Length: 197
Image 1 (tube, rainbow, N blue to C red):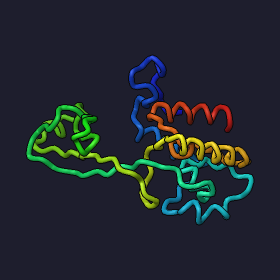
Image 2 (image 1 turned 60 degrees about the vertical axis):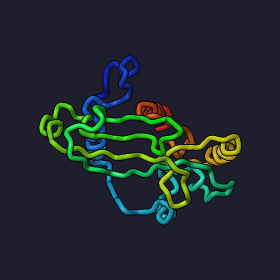
Image 3 (image 1 turned 180 degrees about the vertical axis):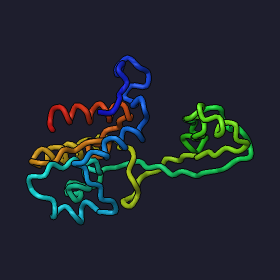
Image 4 (image 1 turned 30 degrees about the vertical axis):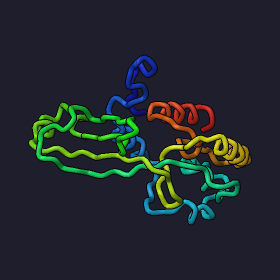
């Protein structure tokens, strides 16, 4: 087990592993029963998966069913990095911009995520990523459900279809067509493990 915060629901950083996400996945994937294969397209390999194998699918639910009820609408993100000749650009890891006149949604300055790393923080340069939101096209990585009434109705059809799958659990933002923060994703994954696996 990874060391989760013992005050899970009282802590303002609910669900964030004490040792960070890297440690969480490193420990999980080090288990002898886990074999990792990368560069494999699930849809090209799914016919090779034994029928009694439990699948946890976290991709777009409409893609799983080959868009039989239509394409759900998604938002995606584009990131534009810049390295600037200054020690600090914005004084925080993430600054959100919600003004209609500003074309981007966030600016990330990663050095602020690790204030304990003095060498990084005191560096005379900083790297920022400017984040833009856009409508996801078929070849884009979907990030956020759009959630119009039409999309909700279409998702309900996919959800009904998903219940007919014997050995597939649909999860995450993409599999459940629901916006979720990381703490919610981790809580949902733990609940799924405890109730379904």
